[in-house]
Image (cartoon, rainbow, N blue to C red; front, side, top):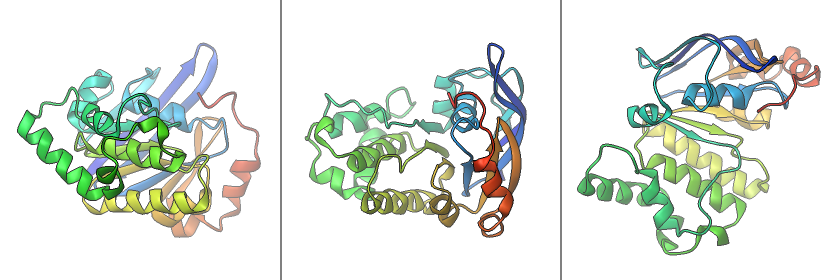
Length: 243
């Protein structure tokens, strides 16, 4: 079953094109990567899917349901969660408080939230060990782990994550990507925006490549990794601002 379907999505910032006529789909339980140079429209597309910005045209379907007119909050309650670039954790709160906020606004009761917290902490043992530590004292990689764990608190059907490796050293990147594979292994669909092409294609089943706001290439990861058109998309002129 298709977890996400985008049909002819276009987003404009005034006269500036963010993305135009983007059509893609993500199967349930699949990891799919969105690739492209800075300014290609990747982050814009995630924001349109999550409802943070409104598309000018097109349809977004979530497990067959028309989602494009639904509020961002309703999308989260429905199971669509977005981890933005830069992690956006609450640095003045503890790890535990950040995790609790991940379930805020969902329809789960206290007992269910407690059970979900136990499940998430079992998946992220580092966070369990440092439950009362202030999030602002964590390294960049640890904050990224917390951001993913906080997203998992709402038990998402689809997790969208923007540039999870940004600013991390190689060892921390490996930890984060191992966690993303674990998330997918339990049945969560993942839509991944990543600047590191090799890294993304190693864990994604398929990928879409954006250039100047449009899909210029797509396919199975193994067939894209040596495709010269992939390099062309990164060397080509980028659109103004990947907002």
